Length: 292
Image (cartoon, rainbow, N blue to C red; front, side, top):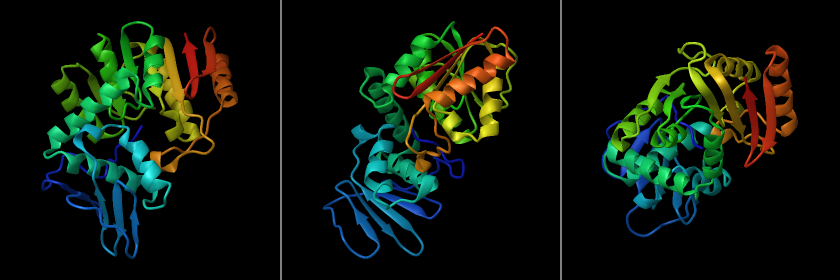
């Protein structure tokens, strides 16, 4: 899933069909696709020009295509091809495509949320199996989700009547989630905070979830975040991670996981918390389930 850069405002005013921030401008293309030229990369859906002042991206993404699956398209077309460099450009262009495809900040993001949830909840999105399985692993009704980003999993749980708190270090992501939850009438509480320092009392949740969070954290913060999850949980902690050949820098990944590493994490916490049990398995990535 994509991330949310805290350096720019995803709700900032912009003229219709355009979005600009941090030396990057994204434009919805009208008319024919013109390609070629110096310092220009073109694919069937995008044209990228890296000038001395601006990195300009033109696209023909339609409103019905706005969803979190856009990340997959950007990686395949622009990151893997070398047109975009690193996480900051990836996140800025992702935001720019959303904002330039539908006029108006709130209408654009609500279209993005509705499309994303439809794909995730119908089972057709790439990440859908992770959310579906995570829901089956939730014990009890009260959930705290760590590293929620756009908050699709908390919104899924809210639809099914769970009392859920979404947390993320990104204030813009939590603001977007507040707006989406209200518009979709799916009540979700939000907290802007570090996953290693959540301002909630001990044992306040039946289950704490951390879905594709740990790969973004350094070794020390992984330990601190898991310790915080165990502090917050009464019954269970559910962790899911990707298992990549190498961490994808454009997504902000800095860690690589396999089953052996997850087993080592589980053994460490079982040794520290008598009575804790750990289960590790693989399903569209790796899973570590800690039962108290």
